[in-house]
Length: 288
Image 1 (cartoon, helix red, strand yellow):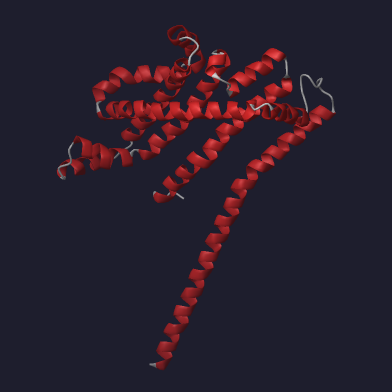
Image 2 (spheres, one colour):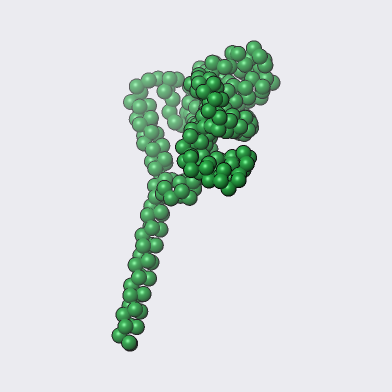
């Protein structure tokens, strides 16, 4: 009996040791993955800077065509000292986020309607897909004629760029819902609103999230296109307007600096908003 108890104790200790080892291994892997996630973009930026500075050092192009990273930094510093850089960044992000929220409010009912009604989908989805394929910059001249040089022009172009992507993403997510889920809801007596709230939206979330990510990318690009063309003092500064000023002045450091700020703002939104949501979704569903 004593021997049996000793064996069970040894097995318990061995099992606990293996569990602890597995836990440490998982934590180590998670730590390495997290470190790589943060270091990899930095390494990529360093590599690009090295290539860039090598091209500048070799004088492949004059500095007014290919300025150095220091010249670009000086241009951004001048804009920051004048208060233009931060005001432009704030205005562009504010417009983008406000327009994106409005696009979600418009696109979500459209996506649900097309996903739940086959007739509506047959009629309207080709139009929605066509709008998604149309470059947003094509709407800028029409929006200027409709609304003049006003914020309404910028928001109209932004919505026309983002709404089709979000709605199509949600519709695609609804298409991937197993039919058994909807039948179970009917058996349990769920009405239309309850079906959408508790079955359709949670089950279609991955496709909806993909549509939101694509919608944000389209919204940001549409905003920059609108700010580049619809330029007016009444609209206030924006990153697109700052880029156009650099073009008009032939100031290549300012042009590249504006491009860098536009790219940086988009990357930070994806990195700190969409990426955590995507990872959490995958983790909850047992995919990572």
